[in-house]
Image (cartoon, rainbow, N blue to C red):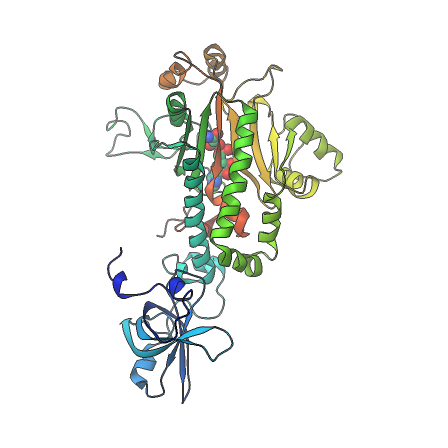
Length: 453
Ligand code: 4AD
Ligand code: MG
């Protein structure tokens, strides 16, 4: 129990009580205050709910106190819980005493009542969690993580804590941040060390020992793509299952997205109502409907045919072998299928070395889940479990297999068909809430050129 919580009530709990004259102690920050000759109203929030409570100050309230009760001030209110005479709330606090815990000059407070742009709020990332949008986002972020763990724990998956410091480039995309200590980049560990881009290679070891596992943690990519969907530090959920093929991976991904999505919407109903009304009008309702219906499925080859037949002018090339860009992904999910769609069987050369080579010799058992408005939120595959095929692929790519000796050995001692996927946690948040920039879906975003906090 946090310090002091025995002496205060959380606003979310208080709003669920209907006990006339119940003594009340609440703490929080002033959102608005309105003073008149006879009566004064102060609205206080504490982060536990999107709602504020209305505090009514008696006429004899001290003028000096009123001056300090401006937006931003931290307060402790003691009083009584009574049915409200105003129309906007059912209950309110009639104050017996208000204490200023921390002053805040309302004339200089960086979060004035007028709407501040999301861009500007990024420059005050230490204060933006007090705004309605970020209040809601952080509660949803918390609930989604909770539901993700619950989903896997209910099914007996083990949460594996894969390392943040990693020597291998799991995705083979050369986008790793190097970790150094002292002048020589290799002296500390005896070899170059990096921040992980994915926990997958490590979590595969545990799928080969505990069958159903997942990792959920921060990942880091030094890609210099300054887009609204890319961050240098983001969180990823990566389940990995043994004795499984691509169909099993896709079935797990679909069940997972639907269950955690709907459970989070239920847990944070009021916050989603806010996003639906003020952030992306009707967007939440669209996602809720999408989560209630089957997702579509199409092969990469079929998807290319659909793009070619669309008559659309795309900025980037289409046709077999071309890589799918966000515009293609969005066209498929948003306009063609009008629902989330699993694209499968991508050309080998577009995907990472570990994906299972199909019998056609030119595609791998891969899948991306594309959703309307955003494009890719999941990337996954069946893994290459055949040692000789994996070795041949590594050498075909000119990759150094020596640092992956342990990964290759998994294929030597009781190898199994297995697979998994990675969900971008912030991408899922963006899709569900309608927040259009990843910088607004993570507490302190890290993007190229941005490290102010
Ligand atoms: O498709 P990716 O690169 O797949 C992997 O890393 C696999 N190892 C996953 C697995 O099979 N276990 O990344 C997975 C997801 C993407 O679909 C995307 O949602 C998200 O991670 N992602 C990013 N999110 C934010 N910023 C970035 N720079 C991201 N890069 C990938
Ligand atoms: Mg991907």
